Length: 126
Image (cartoon, rainbow, N blue to C red; front, top):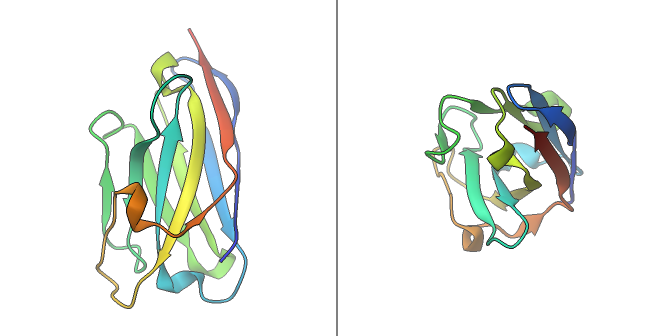
């Protein structure tokens, strides 16, 4: 599957952005999807993940309560709604996907994912 991340931009602290991860192909509903981010000079880190069913999600502690991951099967798209943004959320955000046979499998490690999007820049000003 090929992934296209979009929706990044420049926003003031406290603002919101919604990132989209659009997938090619008809079987995106069989993929678990995750969002990761990489800030300048730092390692890429896990942000959020969702099962293929969309029922189960998991978040990094740093974004819990502020970010929401969701998916629209009909649109072959996974979203990351980011609210109450902070300057420390500034990073390039990547979506990633992994095929799974099980609707409840959830993944949060980079090595779990096989397909990656190109990244979208999010900059939060103070």
